Length: 379
Image (cartoon, rainbow, N blue to C red):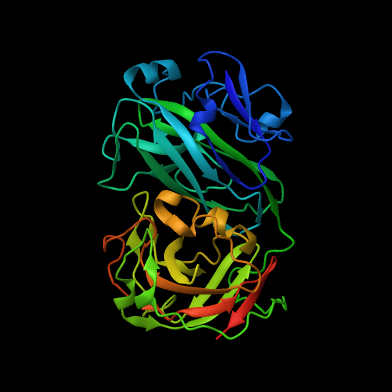
């Protein structure tokens, strides 16, 4: 058995292939990410015996649920199905009733090509997850394929249960009606019911202070560099106005004129059949004198907050240099001027017009970046 053992200072854990290359198949090998660590990421589908392995732990045996053959993982690998978890983003805490989007990036290490039509999905281990009500599967988008050696990012909506406790969320690739296979991503999430405000009510001013950022700049999107999103967003009509931007520990609440009601932006299909997104939140950063922007956080209709705390934006929003280039690793300093706006539909990992049915956006608001626990800005 091979485990990667280390302290996760955040919910993101990226597996370093070079670090694991020395591990012998079938041996008991522990690769330390951090000498003070206790989190365990299980690579061979079997949980480590110590108590620390409850975080990011795989099921003890392959699943044998109804509709799935009781096929050992080794047989699945022999058929060509195998997967490695490249990185995960899970929250450490979540307020009761709050929602957020976790991500699991998986590499196809087998010899078969994954597609929606062939039944490849990310599944909740045990066909149920306490933080993911509804269908226990996250589908590959229609038309997408994941050939051997390629990676795929699955967005996993999570909702805090109404009872405060520590909940384990576990996810693994599944070839539907064939077998579960590959590494398992898992994380313990602590839910608390004390701090979360009524999701049906607009946010109120928290009174949080931010540093004096000097004169407020004006951002012209026509001169901004766009990464991992539609490059022509500056030319999209500005049909919506932002009224409130609330950045807090549970994520970003943003109120704008086309969010709700008869004139709101239309939903677009996303993920499993029947699921959809309404809009995407963009961030605009000034890096070395150049404004750089990307649509990072997706919202479905009725989702009040998403994206996590202000201190985690670099980790949770734009963490992959192959997609976000110079934005990667740039955590805004407290008081730094940062822009925000929204666009209709899905603009994350979409560089053409396939993620939207209308090509509209809001105005860009520029605010001094707050420290945790955040701040509320009204316009």
